[in-house]
Image (cartoon, rainbow, N blue to C red; front, side):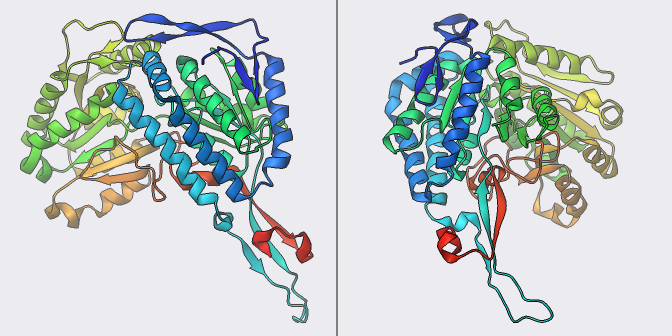
Length: 507
């Protein structure tokens, strides 16, 4: 049941005076429920309660936290159609997408549960004492990983489940032993409240301390700012825009005690297509990439926004067919009027740049909040001279860059900001000549896809979902997969401790 209230631990709260509603972009109307934005006092209560819970939660066993995570997954599934219907009404996304994302969310929770059931993830290390070592005796030193404290998680607009309330940031932080305070995304506050209730139900059923999880509503930036600045908050997880992520990063750095911000931000995900690949299967690639560019209305952080090839007949034919197939795709609904406005503004800004030519654009009338797709092209020299062409257009838009030669192509890749992914489309006959391309691309991205599409992120141990700035704020970490837990831990050593006082993992 949606109440519109904040959840501070196991209590519902609504002391603030600011209210808002979510929006159904498909019907172009507001949804019925009214939500109360958290007051400064409620933010303070949630942070202090999380800190109190941390003193108990950090010492729970891995088996206890695994039971908690599995219980969250069960409670989310128990929400059934209420969750799916709310998700769809707040996003305009289809039921199939909602159920698929729910499955991914549940899968993430269970994977972290499996990880922490034993203590191997803590990487225990034991160096026993050598008292008679010369010229100095050696102390007994033992090390493992411990949680850093309460974490503030910011829900993402484009993934109301997998990257939001019980998403990867929350699941990994809880698995590590860190309480979580979610700043719910205002576009899907109802979905967030339902999932938050599921988490707190699971906490109660598994005996977790009150305050291990809180959910705060907010339609503006004030609640987020207060959370990041609160002295009891020890880390931040964020998925969103470069502007938003950088603002949080700067706020955290200016605190008397700076804290880490793990932000996944913008990416245009360059795709490099060799001439041999274009000649042998250009039409097939045009079909594949038309589907990838328009998938989910282009509202993925891994959307292929930039395609690179050597100028010539093969690239020209591919670009023309890609444009035709993209605009033949029926426009789809975007997440919110503000998302549609942002897409239109960015798309038009890029389209106005010198040297850019429109290849294909959907000109027919579209319903409100639906996004007409577009493909454009530009010469490599013009792209190099204009950083505005590097900017992400969040929606069904892609830019094809015609490189003069391989040297210019490598120069363009080197000029790019950090990216989540890079993709190479090539034939076996190209393999001997791909060394420089792979090395150059590897310095700019967190993951290289070969002969595939970047859209779609497998949740597994080997996945890296991050990259050099501004793709993420720290390229050493991933936001997807069990290694995401490494963001919320720190190494800690015991020296010359009595065995009776050591944690079991270090005995």
